[in-house]
Length: 274
Image (cartoon, rainbow, N blue to C red; front, side):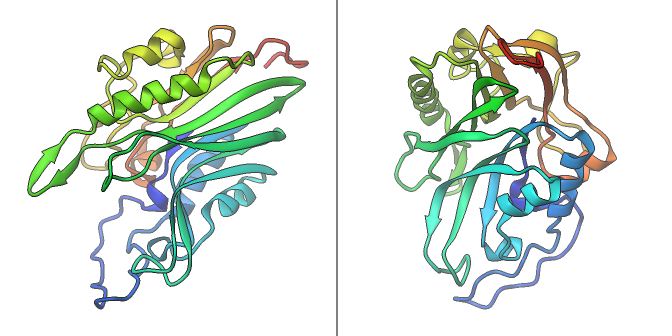
């Protein structure tokens, strides 16, 4: 499963209290990490890749989200990759981090983060890589979050040129890997975009393989339907995809601004077969 949890911010309507100048922000008025955790518990994935994960930010009530989520899911193994690593500032009165995570029921044998090409002044992006033992089969699981567009001087500036470079950097990370591969995350790009074509050339898009319908994942919103498919699970060609789901319902509409994707796959050489 892959899920952008927006640091636990839900979609309830509320009014944020103003923050005094120079002080850390109060927790989001619609902070609802429990909502994301409820979605995760409902579908009970064996391995989940998470994006927009906080550690110790004031906006998310100072919580260590990777540990909180792993404990709530009773999943003993997790790895966190800080793409932003801040000292105390207006975001929090203590050091705090933000990035991606992988939480697993199976042992994580090793993990590490590779920072992706990012222009100065833009949010740093990365790809978290793990090696996980799934019933005797070694599999490489990755979580990533590519560059979004942003507003600069009142104009929208596309993140696509950076995404093109970031995808090439991801493919370089994958080069030479002989284990089965699963890459999950928020790519901020449509399937037909130039930056996504190299991914589809190297790996199998599970929605293309087994999905039914458009598989739109963004935005999750109680007032409107999603309009984009920007979240993906890719697998190497020796991994068999048996089913894939994007759950859209009252619960997932409120928990985050993205819908999750859940895929069932069969790995080669696993002692239990999947």
